[in-house]
Image 1 (cartoon, rainbow, N blue to C red):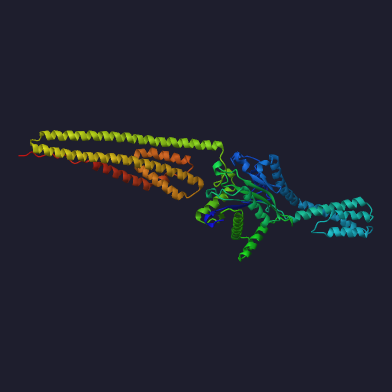
Image 2: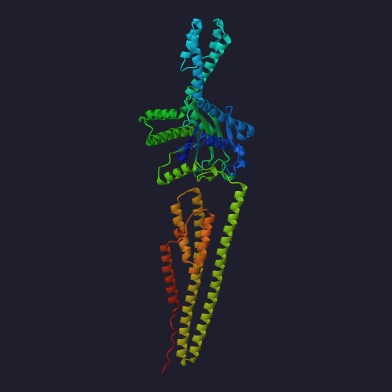
Length: 558
């Protein structure tokens, strides 16, 4: 891999914890949000809002039975079954935990029955010893097969005693299981993660299989005790065929339940992972759970992820390196917007790559037609200016002819050859002066026509760039300044009455482009004052230019 051709990019890596609560509590998502996300990721439903491009469904993949297959190769029933299985595994544990109090009460009742047998003198010691062993097993499970030992002891009412012991053991094991998972409603039960390279960075060479291998292998390497419930790749959340592979991304859903201990302790395990990473870097561990500490945990986890992603990209032969985004003010504001958007439907988020349907594309074409109509209107204005220019040229020719006629008449009245020659010279000078003024006027008209055309084009380009910047959330301040400059230059070329119509069209145009800019920001009081000064200057300039030098008559010779 050639470092000279290394493509640098930012990357978005996000984790979402789903708690045992039914719905969202404060900022923590619950089971309802988990189910909705699973339906979206496995493409089991299509909401009214457009979430993905169905024509690109063949570009979605899933790791199923340890193999990567097309997501749409699984039937809708199969995918729905995956959602139900994931939800059931969580809901069963929640149900067990919620029934813990009742289980303990029932176990106490049967413990009382067994203790009564211990107090009876006629019961065999072997039975009492067996019951004592069962009752003393407080924190560990009891094998149900222990009941079979009662058969060899020889006791009265054998079936009743075996049933009492069997019921106690069953209740005891359920209590132990419920206690082991330590599940309560604030606990994380499932964690969803995804990563992607922003569309603007044009990272489109990474294959779907490599996206899946990176996110799946990361969790298998660093969190092997937590089962992967689903791992999918979305290649259909793009705007069009032209953006295939750009902005695509994988999702992974992992259980927060430790497969070895039965504890729902994923969050703690990730903190332990962060501290091991810090230790390997010679940095101090994070010990408390303050807000500042949680920020440090997230930043450190991000460092670990970036290192792993870059390592795997190199192994796969890609000349790509992801770097952590510089924490500028704009970047922080963008992250805050993304966080606020997390509660919204995917189609309503500010930073989404959800696809457009054919109707959306038709809508854009309609907007293009409307834009063409506006451009046609401006061209009509230019035609009107051309007509005015022709009228001015014609009027100028008439003035030249009148001046020539006046000079000739004066020349005829002059006596003498010398006077006639002087008159001819004056006529030539006057003609030359008028021709120069005529040429200057023509040049000014052509120049104004060219400048006006350039300013119209500049305004159109500025509006298009402003609309694009609003949609892509780029540097609005700089682009808006460029638009204001182009717009102001255009306004200077128009008369005060024309500006009213022009500004109305500009506001309508910006609204259709989805750019939220008030009229006061486009043309503020300072700009209006500058236009007034410009108008006054132009009026004075025209007044001065109209004052032509008087034609001097030749003096008669004595």
